[in-house]
Image (cartoon, rainbow, N blue to C red; front, side, top):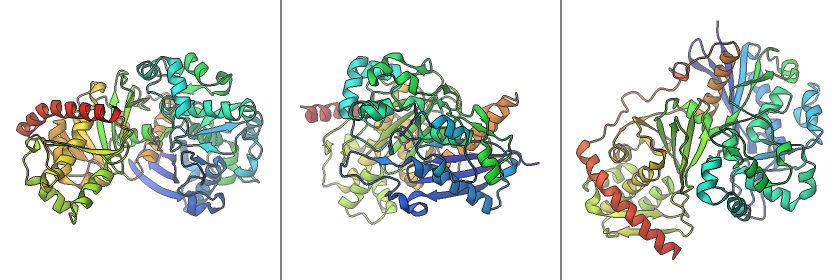
Length: 528
Ligand code: XUL
């Protein structure tokens, strides 16, 4: 008999669902619903409400609730055996916050299946819109909280990250300062993940240790709310935050709303959700300390798992709780594909194959030539003034500049992930540019470890389905090892392994010092 688990991912632009069968060890259903197209009456663009201030990015929480109704209706229509689903979990875009008033508890407990969720939720919000992770309007609040917590190093070592504009704490502070009355009327603050979990559970759901770490409010080591951080953020915050719990942990049976309306099993478990990045870590199978994935997208991101909590004293990288226990890191390099494409365009190179051919014409290490490709303000390292910096590199030598961008990006990843004190055994490469073999070979050589490609389109929703299975097994008293649970679901692309060339790796082992010095010089010049 099948054992079905549902994972949902409420991201910026869409809601996705993945159903897995744990017995057959495969994905049996997947579907995505794009907010702009499926719910045009909210007027969002790419999931975000237009705003005159380019720094302000909000979304309507009712849209996310309505999408949940639509998704269940679609699954029912598609013949998904909803009555056989044993547990539901999920993930949400990180950092976004929802503000509920004192009517929320009763509304959640009495969701009426005769009415849509949107009607059931009328009047429960103390703030109509939700600031999301793309919002960067809280620089002032970031500085205020950081100062009260004792600077970058202390903020990072207590909460897992320095303060960042998109993090929930600075967002809550701005709301409490600019709209004190609606803030005072707020009985519960939820993250996107815990809001969606609350709808499914029919009660306020906990925030998990993964998404909770994206708030600048959770003590990253003790995994409880940090009093100093709450005090530095806003008055009376303790009473507005829900409990913290492990992702996948059972909250209770699903709300009768979903049973009566869509035929979900009344015994199906609603569980604690997490953030999309922590869920992706599970979906990609990074469940053992030392496992690392690099996603090569518009921005490049470095995900890694760690057993012990190490924080970045420079405050560039983030530490979140991992749903598999222990910790994970997320380091985001903004000038990823964006910068690679700029170089390709600048030198008028027709395609990536030709680009790889040019890289091959130059020796690894580029005869010491270094390029710092900060086409856009960079997150890691922190660079506020965009600019391209060249060291021992002639702008007119095309091939050397092509190699230089690949080498710079990989050396930057190596340099800025050292604080984790994790030497990866292997790296999973994912994202759009991960089919570029020339780039992956540079990655293997710079990181001095094997690189394997992995292609999972809905890694967060898959991770959430696996979290649901883990939570259900735990509730039944059957603790299961994550490695066993994820095996078979997350497999690298066959024959995709790229091994490092030991001689070349040695060259990078030396060049990294020069790279770090060049970066230091460039930052000194920028910062005056
Ligand atoms: C992570 C972050 C984004 C969102 C995207 O810190 O801000 O990756 O989670 O959904």
